[in-house]
Image 1 (cartoon, rainbow, N blue to C red):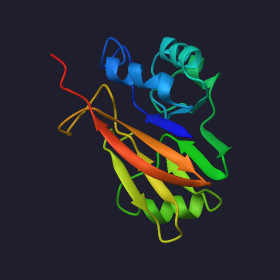
Image 2: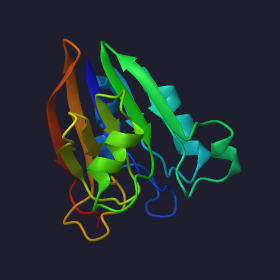
Image 3: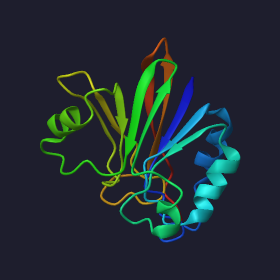
Image 4: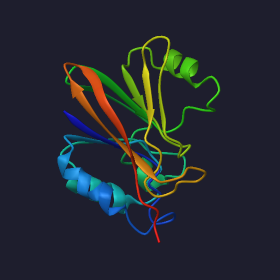
Length: 167
């Protein structure tokens, strides 16, 4: 099972549209995961029409229209892998412990908010993934998103994709 992970799209505030590379990757994904901060319902509509399956949550910058359509936290079983999605996990310091305590029944937690890619595993075995942002690199060298594979109930081949700088 092929996953595409994204978050913090912030369209149209940080970019007029999603990057073509991200849009081109959508048809190859069995599941698209968005960890919040859409800011525009049109982007949710776009992903709902183009993704085979979308797992998504709202973020702190998402208003009532998005909050009415999306949960704060999502939990899904994907081919035996227990996946969770949330926007905010708090400061980087202590993140592993907080997330392991809050989500003891998950194998993988996808989160956003910081726009900073993150890939760690807690002492309890919970894998934490933040795909960064495809539209707002903040202090990062490039905008990013992730892809991953699920095989036999395990997450494999996690890849961070760096997007070219916009002109």
